[in-house]
Image 1: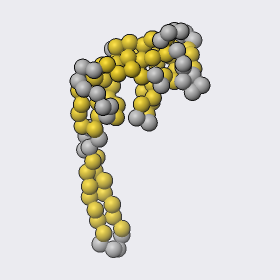
Image 2 (image 1 turned 60 degrees about the vertical axis):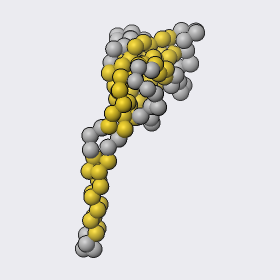
Image 3 (image 1 turned 45 degrees about the horizontal axis):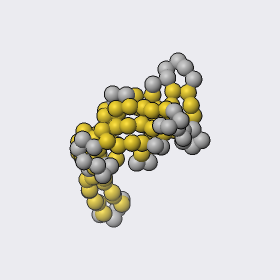
Image 4 (image 1 turned 90 degrees about the vertical axis):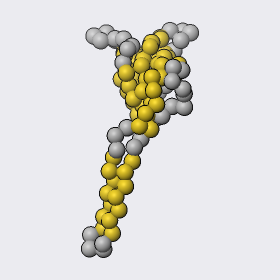
Length: 108
């Protein structure tokens, strides 16, 4: 079974046991996170449930593995013929999660 969740302005296709990195969530290591913004739930080769905009009866549970920072992104700005150059770097704060379960049902 797989699901498409939305967090941090991005969408992720996840299955149970997947490890994903999402934008920082304010949780401690080992805490459980429940995603209720589930956009789609389905199984390979079978029908799927598509939400409008979310599937009301679906939840995805995950556990926080660690808080980390991503790779450095170089931001370089320049205006030609003006002598203006500016070089900056950026490292995004991330949270690594492991998906522990996908629940679908009336009480999920």
